[in-house]
Image (tube, rainbow, N blue to C red; front, side, top):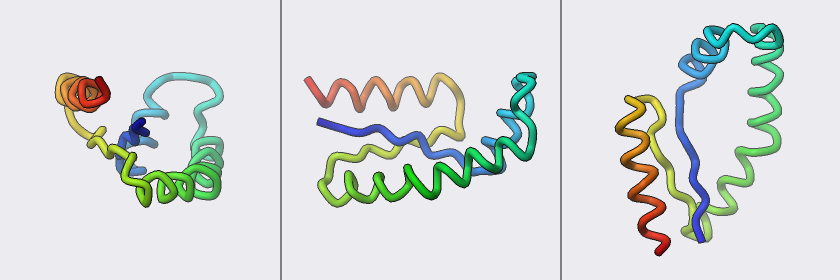
Length: 78
């Protein structure tokens, strides 16, 4: 089993989320979401990393490159 983690710098995440045009994507809401991520999700990643089942994928690149890396990670499962 594998857990896939898309790694994207926070500055890029914020820019992407603000550009989506959703009414609930305000800077304050995004900061709250990131705080929840750091508090609740990030520690779980270490759990999976310690068990050698975490696959980190650079999400700060082209859609094509991310797709290729995701497909490669999924192919390793079969």
